[in-house]
Image (cartoon, rainbow, N blue to C red; front, side):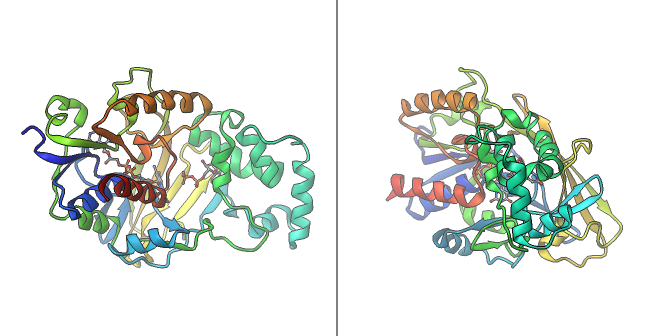
Length: 367
Ligand code: FAD
Ligand code: UDP
């Protein structure tokens, strides 16, 4: 069995599946393993009563990169879903991302100039370059919106005070002085018609896949069966946490079938107060404009992560970046393993960034 495969790919998420597909296309022999009971990693959907349930949280594809859009469209066409989530603060409803609809509702104003003047006044308490998420948020949208729509949500989501989180997290969200509720500033956006599994199934078609197989439990076998390993699990788990564990944020999902056709009127509702224990409720049918007589909703609860739990979000603060660098340097010393994807690279990647990273590796490794 020694070096029987060209590549062992650990993880059948988007990164691993794209690499496996491109390598196989170039005549390489690949084996994909995954510790879960299904392929697709976090984009996996479970179909129930004709509704695709986003098992690991709402996934909306968006990108500004035409090459990536064309690449993923080879595997599925996309619908015209535009993410326009609603913020619910103790029952008060606001539009997201922060835009003229939000400003108008919160301050009873109408013009961009009025909004600009209020935000300018409120943000004057921050006079230096923002050092943390709180300062960054206030300097983008002022104190009122920070208090109602950011502080509670963020502290639940990350389990930390906004003063000890990096500013870049909040810069993911657009702030607009127009009446535009599109959550993303993206040229291309949508949900794959027929669901995400269709994409993964096409990528892995004709490739050997072993599910329920944790690399770290069968390391002795799996370290020797291929010339190279592509590892998309967490980099610190591969090295058995020898410098200590990186921090991650965990999540728990609770899904309910409801005997009604429309529960909340929107795919994603964010609960931005600190007392509601979940951050979001997803109503899955709205991603695909479903008109079934029943509906499925999922409540998303952030949770503390410990070794053995699924790691959902890397926490890219200074301490963790330094620790990651140590693992990264250690990885460079190994010549037959490459780390990739959200966990392998410890980056807060969206799907388009994962595709970009996988295709870069393909160019480097296989062309
Ligand atoms: P993953 O999908 O995590 O796949 C890694 C795979 O490796 C998993 O299947 C895992 O089981 C397997 N694995 C790990 N360790 C081992 C091991 N030791 N042995 C065997 N198998 C192993 N992106 C967007 O673009 N839009 C969104 O709206 C969006 N929403 C998101 C919402 C949530 C709640 C989360 C958590 C992420 C969201 N993302 C979104 C990000 C998106 O999920 C990722 O960018 C993408 O799925 C990462 O792909 P990946 O292959 O790197 O990792
Ligand atoms: N955020 C917030 N209020 C919201 C939505 C988002 O404060 O209603 C903040 C929060 O800190 C979050 C960050 O913006 O972590 C990025 O939000 P995004 O929706 O991009 O997070 P993801 O979908 O990756 O969980």
